[in-house]
Image (cartoon, rainbow, N blue to C red; front, side, top):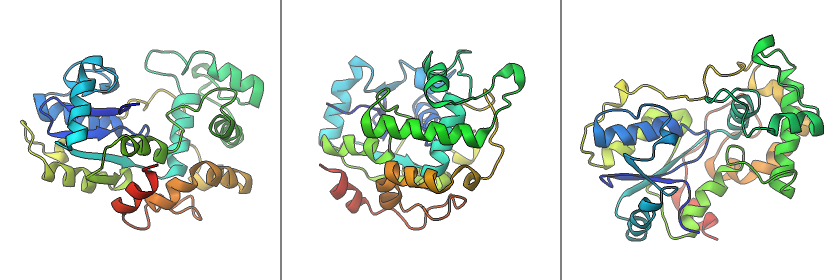
Length: 272
């Protein structure tokens, strides 16, 4: 299976397991800048040079050798499951992608037909019932994850623990897992632990949000989107994420983690 979703700087100063919707664009750009002194011109997910990625055939042997020997500082980043699934909905379902089209082509029409989801359009200013449509999307997301229908689960709403586990199960180990909500603190610890060809002043690094500006803005507090049924579904999908990464299930409006991550516990519970 290898190490899908793994990026490494060309200097091999650091190695990162991508978790979608968890500051991955900003982290990728920091890694790119740390080797080259410039940011990638465009969405760093599209970069086919300047970063080693598991999706690039020529990078796989280098990444695998590095992981097996634990030659580089290895890390990843997590996010509150409530805000992550909302971000996935507003970006991938309600939003228009950077190519000017809907995500995955006919996905939104399929959701409209099978789940009754309405996400508006740029022509009507994305006017739609955000709460009703999100809750219907959540049913769809649960169906993909639990029963793998009407499609395989998408990386943007599948559990963070699942992404993180593949790296561990195939022989990798993390030196750090930090919180999107404490991004500067967590990323600075990574940078303090490595030596990069180009020094990084984290305070001067912009935030790269490739989905921003291409769809509707969230109109309500987080808790408004989650009634009792929605919270039941969230627990069904993300129970392990809440438990391992210590986010507050009881209060959707509390986006901050309640405790630090225990790396030993993560490795033990995600190794099989």
